[in-house]
Length: 352
Image: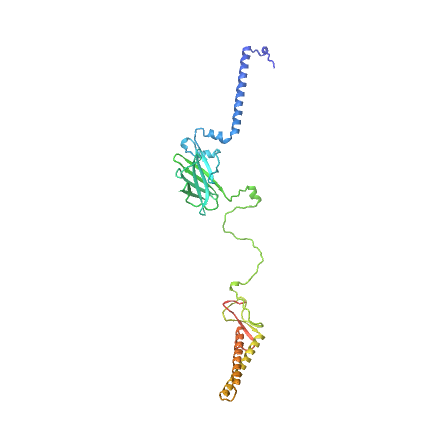
């Protein structure tokens, strides 16, 4: 574009001055843009932690120092300032670092009891357990808090208090060294499940305070009513027959020796008849034996007849004893009449 100096009424000196100012502005603008581009690339290449953090602590202070250095510790957390997260320590715990100071925390079960164990470091080298005074506070999801005190244990510090289940909480650990305090937060989320509002609504999950309530619903389930086997005695008759009468009801408490039922049995009549027959034979055998013994002593009868009568007497006695044992095994006595027997309870129990 060609400028008509006659129409604008501008001298050549003024044109030179304007051109010089324009060139200077272009040079300065280019320098500013180049500086911004270089700084942006430098920040992207090294990350937020290496430059923004360094700028925030340009006066040489570190996270965890007191306000005497001109740094508000709590404000440093609240303003979103980024700090290096914990890494895995040499003992398997979480390792926290602030400047040269380091602290490893591990929740371990010693002797079956979970306790918090602490190791101290300086420039990644172990420190003695008395290099700092350590205390911790547990804050659970319910808001309940627990204070932990520590005691030396070999090369570490171990909490005197047991950390009970559930292990879902935050532990604020404060380490007071000879020069400055440090604070770290250990998050433990064992068994913790996080759900969004949409997931809670989709799963129809409700949260309420536990308390007394009335059950409004009833369930119909199949079941079986049975007697208590520990208090029931099954009485079985010792002989087959027909039940004539039952003198106890189901579920009734009975005593030892009480008659429960009367059973009519032909087998009982046969056993009793056998006993009566054996008893009559025994009576006859005794009479014959006494007579043969008297005749033998008088030299009237032969000794052989006497011995035969004696043998018959012994056999009759054995037959009577055998018949009595059979009746006794059936729960009968020789004095029972007819073919009925009584079934009695063996012990204090419930009638069958």
